[in-house]
Length: 510
Image 1 (cartoon, one colour):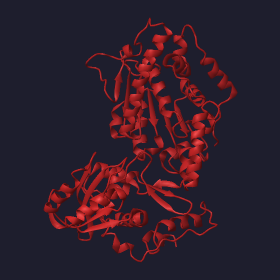
Image 2: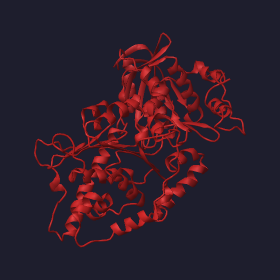
Image 3: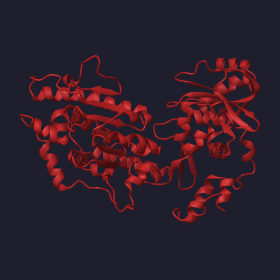
Image 4: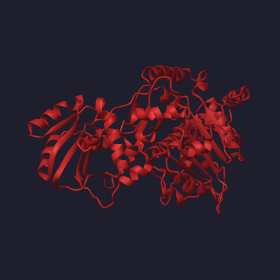
C-alpha cells in the first residue's frame, strides 16, 4: 500500500469551492464539508482534508481509516465534519431520526480538547455567517445549541435544538451505552485494548447503520488498528476505505509547515531518532517503537488486597523523582515482604514542591525509612544535600548511566511476579505508556510524546536496592555490525542489546 496523492481534479475542485460567493448555498453547505468549512467557518481546507471529506460525504462509505503524519489537521477535520453532521442532521437514525455523533479519543484529556475545538468552530461559524450576511444573521451556530436546562451541554457533550448530539468520550467501557450515527476514533492506533474497539465502539453503530471513521498516526507493527489498516496488504478483502497521507502533500500549500518538518527531520536523524521520525512524520508503521511493558504484565502487578498506608514500622525505601518543566515531583515508598516488593505509599506534588523537605521529615517519623534513593539531577542537588543534612541515608541514582539496566531489571522482576502495587490509576497508566525505542546503537526507554513517567521513575528509585541482586554481573551485549534488523538473527541481537547476558529472556534467544 502506498501514500495517497491529491489529484489535479481534486485540487481544481477545492480551488473552485474556495471562491467567495455573495450568497452562500445551504444545499452545498450540507452536501460538501469543504464548502461548509470555507463558507460557514472561514477555514480554507487543506487539500488532503478535501479528499478525506469527500470520502466522508459519500453516504455509501461507512468504514474509513486515515493514517497521516502528526500535526497535519486530523482533529480539525473530525471536528468540522462532526459539527456539520449534527447541525444539519446528516445521518438520521433511530426512532426519532436524529444524528448522534460520538468522538472517541485515546485519552480523556484529548477528548476534551476535541470538544473545545468544536466549541471554537461554533464561534468561528458565528463570525463567518455574520460577515457573509452583513450582520443580518447573528450567532447562527450558537443559536443551534439547545438552551433547555434539561439538555446535556458540558465539557464532553453538546445538545442541539434539533435533538442531535455530539459526545466526546475516552476509550472506556462507558462507550457501550451509546448508539451513534457517526463514531469517530481519534488516534485510534494508540488505543491498546482490542475490546475497546470490537466490543464497545463497533456495536454503537449496529442499530443505526452508522459510520465508523478512524484517524491516527502509526504506533508500530502491532495491535488491532495495524491489523485492520493492513499497510502491507496481506488481507485479500477489507470493508474499510483507506487514506494514507504524508506531510509532503503540504509542501506547496503550507510551505512553513513543510519547512518546519524538514528541520525536525534533520534534528531527529542527527540525534539518532530516525525511527521515531519515520513513525511520527513519515507515518510509517515501524516496529522500533513498542510498549516497554505489555498491559497484561502491568495489570498482574496490581494486588487489590494492598492499599496505601500512612505509617509503616517495617524496613522500607523511598524513591524521590524530582519534577521539571513538564513533570511533577513524586515520592514513592516500597518494602520487601517474602522476597516480593510492595508499594505502600505514594504522593505527587501537582505544582510546587516547596514543602518537600518538611514532608520528608514527617515521613521519617511515620515510616522506618532505611534509604532515600533520589534522581541525581541538577534540579535535585540542593534538596539531596538538605536531606543528607537531616540525617537521611541518600543513594544518588545516575539516570543517564543506570536507567536502562535498572528498568530492564525491574521488567524481569515484574514478569516473575516479584513487584506488587496497590491500585494506583496514574501509576498504572504511566507504566503502560512507557515506550521502548530501538535506536541505531542503543535502546531507550521513554515516555510517549506529551506523556509523563514521573510515577514509574519514582517506583524504580524506590526499588533501586531491590534490583541490585539481578543487576550485578550482567553486561549489555552490543549489537554486531552488518546484521539485518528484519532477520531472525537481527531481531535476536536487537533484543540482546536490551537485555543481559544471563537473563531468562536472553536465554530464549540463544
